[in-house]
Length: 86
Image (cartoon, rainbow, N blue to C red):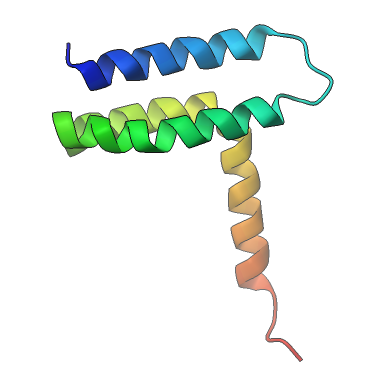
């Protein structure tokens, strides 16, 4: 297993451990840190292992961080469906 895949597995385990902690703030600060670490890691995985493995790791990351992706999709939809500025 390459270094990038090892780091991606460690990132996934870390994300699941963070999700197990009780939190009143709904884990958003941890999600921001995981996203900040995950984006360059995804690039490293794709560079080292190719685009198909990169897509698999991307899908795994999206399944772990699904709520930030849902909110991003809602924001994009709301932005695109808004009428022209008056």
